[in-house]
Length: 224
Image (cartoon, rainbow, N blue to C red; front, side, top):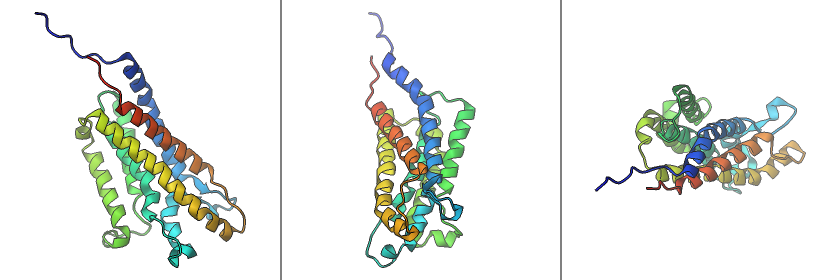
């Protein structure tokens, strides 16, 4: 009796993974560029608000300070969490076959995105306060994921794909929803209607692309 043939990878799956091999790093870099780019643009540099600024900026808006409007402030940091964790999860995936220079770039991006979770003028004691506890947990989790990224590469591709997909979708949709809630307040402060800057558009499109392709990849099967 002849032995069963070894599993073969569907040609369609192989072509998709070849595309994702380059699409995902590009999407991560573009998402980070968009996040750190202007979400509220202005000709005066001091009045430009980036995605990174929003988590702190919204605390000083009058409706927030008065309790008239409630937001999940830490939600503005979800893009950083998605970028850092995704970079760590894909860096050593066997299917993607990244070279060491690409892995180094992904891991460096994971670290940079994670460290941007730190608030301005932070101290270890400040990070343990209730105000910054969620950021501290996200930071610790992101750095641990980076440190154990070779082991995380052994996780089933469906789990990884679903996790990246759902997290990236949340990281795109929740911050943008909250941004549009506070945008009229910012427009009133600037005494002029404000539109989302190019950073907003780039970050959201890159994260939605990452999320959609990750969810699609999660449901692909290996054919025997």
